[in-house]
Amino acid sequence: MVRKIIGFLYKETGTLNQAALLLGLFAFLSQVLGFLRDRLLAHIFGASAELDIYYAAFRIPDFLFVTVASVVSLSVLVPFVIEREAKGLEALRSFINNVFSFFSILIITVSGLAFFLLPALSGFLFQGFSGPALAEAIFISRMLLLSPIILGFSNLFGSLTQAYNRFTIYALAPLFYNAGIIVGIILFAERLGIIGVAIGVVAGASLHALIQVPFVVRAGLFPRFSLKFDFALIAQVVRISLPRTLTLSMSSIALICLVSLASLMTAGSIAILSFSINLQSVPLSIIGVSYSLAAFPTLSRRFRENNLEAFKQQMATTARFIIFWSLPVSALLIVLRAQIVRVVLGSGLFDWDATRLTAAALALFALSSVFQCLLLLFIRGFYSAGFTRKPFFLNLISTTVMVMGTWWLVKIFYWSAEFRYFISALLKVEDLSGTAVLMLPLGFSIATIINGLLHWMTFEKFFRGFSRGVTRTLFEGLGSSVIMGATAYLGLNIFARLLDTTSLVGIFLQGFWAGLFAMAVGVTILFALKSRELHEVWGVVRGKFWKANVVATDPEIV
Image (tube, rainbow, N blue to C red; front, side, top):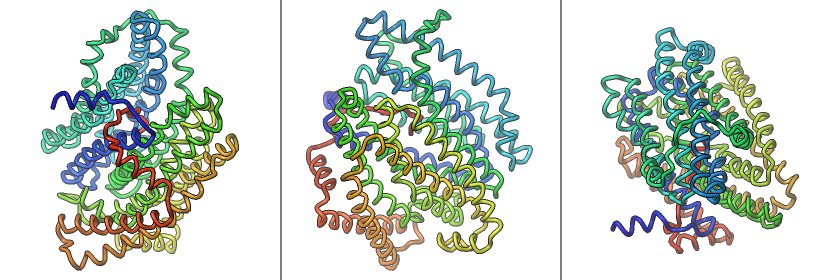
């Protein structure tokens, strides 16, 4: 058994689909633990003001992680590590010590400044909080400032485990992160409230880093702090990481703006928004991240070889499979939204009204799911071709559109009774209060679709011919997904008469059988259309994709 486990850890990657499907498997396992984490939070706190405080407190520390800690991200450091390792162990140790020392000073300094600036920043961002609620949010934010520091060091360790092909070690790290949070919730939440959850977050971040330490120590690469920097080397690392950092910061800023707007709404709005974001991120993590990451090395290699046709072909192939998977998943998320939310979150203090609001928000987020996934591919495509500024400016435009557009949607929602009733009735929540929160996912999806189309058109402008073949998959996927959605809706009505939908098991079985029925119909349609993607995926499944190796992604991407 031990030999089999070790063999699994060190198998090499095969095709794009092998790597992507196995990455998706690990992402799915992480999502399962994420579901358990969210279910515990929903059970104990419900969609409450207390949970609003927790999610709001996360935003500034998360922004620091996405920006400052991305200096030591895998995408930036792995090429440097491989280059220095070829020059010898001492050259590699010197590089690691330089980066570790510089990053230590940078992240601790920035986190220290944030510690003192948090009262002003939180007061500006979360103006809907009362005095005591704001004070608690500031206290928890200060606790959570440990998280970007620890996860930044974990990124540094991860660049070593990746460079030395210990892929599964790092792929398991997110599982330990969520496990730490879950343990914190179970042990401390009942006694300490949200503060106990924050303790679990710090513990989870520590586990994320500690799982990689034994290998780093055995390899003789554990970093040592020194004030003697190689400034030329540090400047080179920062210069490469800066465009990526700026691009990633756009999504973090967008999320901060959404949470800021939600703080002005009824209590529980931030919790509703956060739960729906976590649920809708499943296809992004499993499909978008997996395929874009699996394709990235090949894209970079083809462009360096000046083989533009192969480069465009790899982009088109990856885009086709992203569309092939994400469109049906989006359709099922929209139709089965209530069943999904109730099964994942529906217990304890998380009541039926909160379920319906979260489900409606999930449906609106799902509208842009395919574009969220494609955006990761386009960004990596631009990076592999050396165009680091394009994604930043395109994301800057879309973030501006999202912030301004969402603000106006909220205003219109309050001003216009007709618009308010139309949206509420469409999502079957017209009898609920607090429906203004639905403008946040709607604004997000509209801006994301615009962003995806801008990236697509810009990429096609630089690499003409990329879209050939992709558009066919898009129309096939749209057609089959619409039919799948209609089939799932029909299945819900049929199984509602056969099952006890007042129980958790009954709701699960209703959604499960309706979804399975819809998938069977979708596969049949794609088979009749002679879908190339369906044929290739089936070939990979038959080829035992789980024997492939695992390459983990940077956590800030997810």
